Length: 136
Image (cartoon, rainbow, N blue to C red; front, side):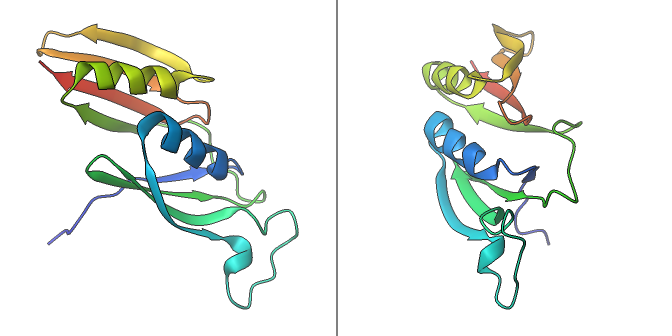
């Protein structure tokens, strides 16, 4: 039995900044931030020691996990996955959509849909794609 499903977001050295954005824009609560320099017996290159090797963020009732890759293993900034957020308050949805879109790109503004919801999509400043849905 699967206990829980958690998206894991990877960044090219910007995980710490992304965490700060998600805390501010979405009210994320961060726990368990570990850095490459925290690994027992590991001596990372000086430029890698403060990179995030693992962090866990609570957003609403869900959890996402975050890490940086090392410069020798870059990840593409964008892909075919979106993190989807479901809201029960349209004002909260708009506030968080606007906050997370700063420095990013709105790919679909918040709008009423045929399925009876307000829906929008954006790519944040760090290349992560998000969907915002609020059923009416």
